Length: 316
Image (spheres, rainbow, N blue to C red):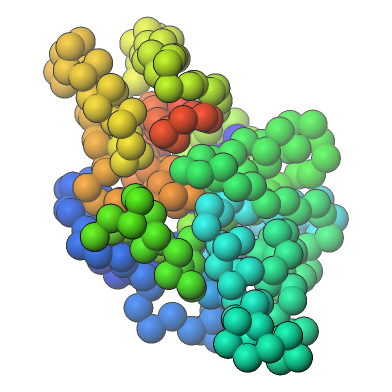
């Protein structure tokens, strides 16, 4: 499965270079001076949540990046898949603010669409004239990756020919600040990253496999078992992990015990990504696309679903 287009709307502080160099972020980094009109002209967007506009903007960049490989497809054969962790809460707050601050009489019907779970993917389809299927996935850190896996499945089953997959976190209602049991300081990345994928095995970067599985608090070794399977083929050159949960230490200790440092280029991006939620896996994918050879991208939740993506990165 090829990634033929990419788009991102992030803080200027966040880049592939800063992540690879393990630059530690400080606080919550949001896109500076973001204005949806810089990306697309469409009536009514200003009434939507910031997350929706961030997603639409990143999709605009991805479509431009894909060029004719995107435009040659008919609208009914294009799918839109969105992964987001906290934006449904932000959207509900966005809609209900007038109720809390005044009365139900002042609820704006214009804001209602933002409270619908499938709001972001639906608006993206409307703005870009896409009539194929669309869906939203909410599964913690894996939200973006699970949306990607869903898109791959629909393409492989010939339901669609091409898919736009977006991970987005907007923090409109300050929801990210509420993470970590209200810890005093939260380091996080907000914004949107979009990829456009199609079924083609001849070009790079190419997603070879998405291995998804689940663990409980008592069987975290399942992460290592699946990682070992992917490392046993002996051709992996890079490994990227760091989901800002207790699984990071388990992965670190395993890699250290096996002394993979001499064989693998290992990146723990937790310092430079923070609590990026749905963006976490897509930040790793962005980095992997700029590396040589086969890369394993590991994304985990504290408890629940995990994924190991095998991607063949660019060729020099």
